[in-house]
Length: 151
Image (cartoon, rainbow, N blue to C red):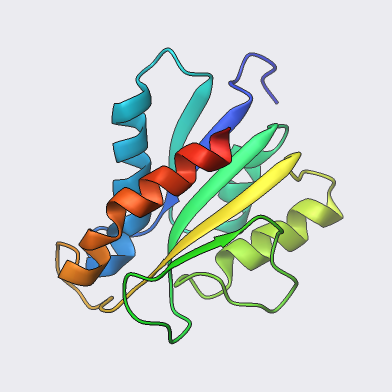
């Protein structure tokens, strides 16, 4: 682990070629553009792989993960979870990747000091580019939630 890394990380999880699943990278990029390079924040992109997520958030004071969710709520609904999900609870559109990363991180003592999961309910995760209107409309609220989570 590199001690020179910023103490906070924002990880945008998703695939921009699967419509609303691209919300995570889009929100992470929007926050990066707002904060610039002077902030003590690193920005990363993930595909939901548990090991990569664990590596990105290990040793951080704050890790904020933004991803599309599929819970049955209306598309664009914002979910903010400041407690890591229990095993088996799906919080992402990536078949438990974040849940698995949390379980593995706990097992290996690699959790960040504070983990905030920000999910935006997806409406369409089929192949294609661009967010649906409902999910695009939630971007400002998701960006604000990330900024609040960063402190």
